[in-house]
Amino acid sequence: LSIEREGRGLRIRWPDGLAHSFHPLWLRERSFDPANRDPLTGQRLEEAVFLPLDVSIRSFSGGVETGVELEFSDGHRCAFDASDLRRAVEHPLPDDLVGAKRLWDASLDPLPRHAFDDTAGDSGLLALLDDLARYGLVLVEGLPGELDALKSLTDRIGPIRVTNWGGIADVKSIANAYDLTMTGRALEPHCDNPYRLPGPGYIFLHCIENSAEGGDSLVVDGFHVAERLCAEDPEAFRTLCETPVTFRYEDGDAILEHYGPLIEVHPDGRVHRVRFNNRTDQVVATTIRELDRYYAARRAFADLVWSPEMMLRFRLGAGQGYIVDNYRLLHGRTEVRLATGNRHLRQCYMDRDIVASRQKTLRRATG
Ligand code: OGA
Ligand code: ZN
Image (cartoon, rainbow, N blue to C red):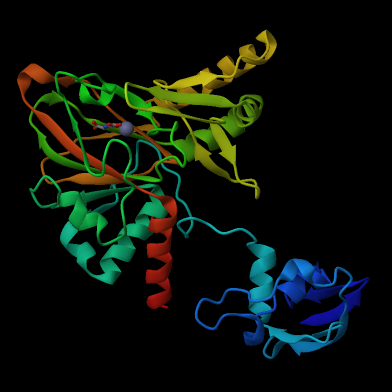
């Protein structure tokens, strides 16, 4: 580790060549010195906004093993692990679920499957959450037959998101449907409820009965679609990243509306959310020229979503279910021939922070 002054900053260079010049106030406010932190929560106890803006580094020493020891012009002393500083440079922003993503298409085989019983223990549950991080999709087998069996699964992860439609809700055809999902109609690949804020993070679906013809499940890896669009039609990709689209749902009791681009890029450059919901979207009325570009770009995106090589199809039986990342995957179903039998699913949502926190604490516990 080489450490030297560079202007007001401190330049640290790791043996493999990675180097960064740290701002003195950035180092000063990051101090993990116990005197500045609540021992229980790790939260900062001093009002860092009022630290001297011209704080400087009085002295420094250290190495890879010993860490970096600093004394600042306001008299404060602290030490950092070299690896913490390195992580701050290499991985400045947090992930939701952690772990490398594997983009997939219709050829994904086998599907990531987990037995409900295996999720009772920490290692089985972590394996499921790691697969959810990797694929944005996991199938769950052997759910109990009760209507609220999803609760036994979600309780192992965290609290579910309760909306104006309740917690665990029916996806079943009824006479006075208030949503297209309650009819037998096919559902085009979509993300759920982009008109909510925050949008539902993860969707849990549980099949109670699927005896009617049709009603096969469809899933598409939206990140893979976005990556392909970026490679094959960069202009369309950019247009979908930059064009704001509104999403709206209204009935007698609720008005839900929000907006966002169809493809959302994280500040670090990775695609981190796709929105695709043909039932509720309405692009902002901009110019003819811009809308020509937007509609062509959306079509290019949709052509990839619908292409047989991207769309994975499977059939849920009673006691099976799946979890999808609603910011990454698009899901749908084929038409249900209601005269031929019954189709009854249950579903609920969970926020992203809850799911990610469970995975991260399990990983911490298992070292
Ligand atoms: C939905 C939905 C999937 C299915 O209700 O939004 O996607 O298989 N349902 O019915
Ligand atoms: Zn849906």
